[in-house]
Length: 330
Image (cartoon, rainbow, N blue to C red; front, side, top):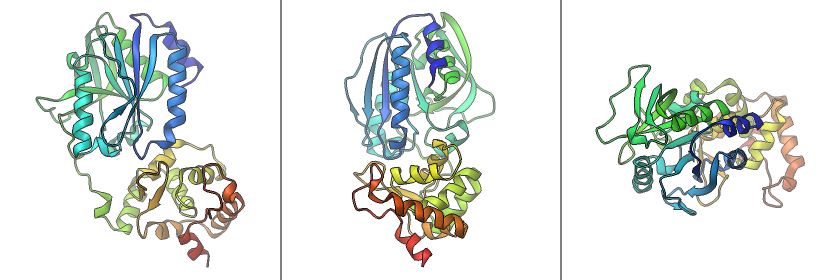
């Protein structure tokens, strides 16, 4: 968020809410911590809220931090909706239960750091349409939604959750909805949340796919920037600081969503207990390395060799060039 966002929010009229900002600390969210800091600072400085508190949503579906419980609370959940608590299992039962309990008594929305074109790959893809609120501060259960395109009918016990991009336009639009005096209506996107998570239609677990199937699926759906980046990332060890260094070296303005496309592609798996540390699934790195021109490959190897243990966030003495890349080099 930028200064224009802060100014716009501070001009809006309406009741002074208390904001509960929930950060999803799941295994794919480490790269979005700077966005959390920016979002919290901008919303706190806007003067639109009596207070801004931060809670942390853990991968097991539980929350850490002070919980705000009163009728002046609104909740924004910052999440890429890709962690284990968003998919079927015990963590999802806990998290969806909490999310639904909030939505019954207050305005709740998900702030999605990924661009809208990538939402269909997540557990909460959202559908575009018109959202109507009967009054200011109406709970989600009081909202109505009309989709622009034909979408499956929501279940009888489903709860509507607006999904927003993390930009000024989307946030201002949602605040116009919750601040509306009577009958406010906006364009937006929503997802329907059931008592327990359901599998995304047509989704296949990465563990069920071969390396070639993962590679081909990624090539068919990824942006050109993300596909080009993925080959260079396979040159280094897939730790977040190393991946960010490689992306920055490619000569274009680094876009977090391109890196997110690679991380969320299924070609990588998170290393348990180590935020921001990943490993390529067996056989994938070798396929990606074949897409990198020899000259570019050598430049990335030289970059990582020079960086060595001086890279912030990398263990001292760590070799940053991947074993697969060293074999490819030989």
